[in-house]
Length: 176
Ligand SMILES: [Zn+2]
Image (cartoon, rainbow, N blue to C red; front, side, top):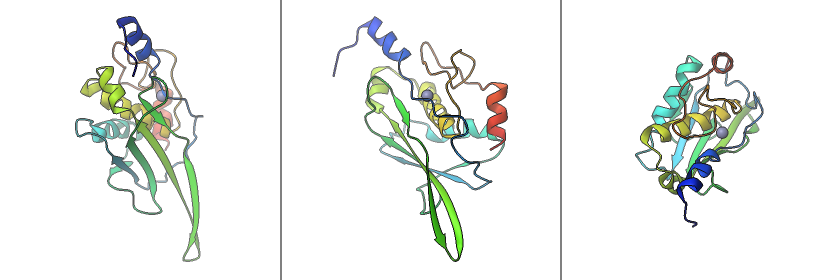
């Protein structure tokens, strides 16, 4: 573990972003719930709050915080280590396919990794932790980074990440 100077900390915060996924990477869920299962995420991470925040913009209850049943749309949020100085990482979404009862069924799985120790080092507040969850779920929804401080998809946390969505992002989320 390397030591962070004040300047290093600012640089690290500026770099604590996850990769942008292509827009509309995930197919519309068609009103089905998307299960959000957490593994090893401490209780002081308000995962439900982050998911609810994003649901305000989808206009419906998309996320259901519960262990993912088989063959459902699933976002797995894992505590783990994230390469470099990032805190969160959303993996590309995978679509699976199965045939059951003569019907073709597709479902999606996404893994979000959260580096809890890194967040602690960067002194993430409860609000910043909630932002990170909303931001990574934003990637799940197909949103890319914003280069300006106009939305929650702005990837830098310094000094505090904005908790708002642009008109285009709102339209994208409402269309899901
Ligand atoms: Zn990101």
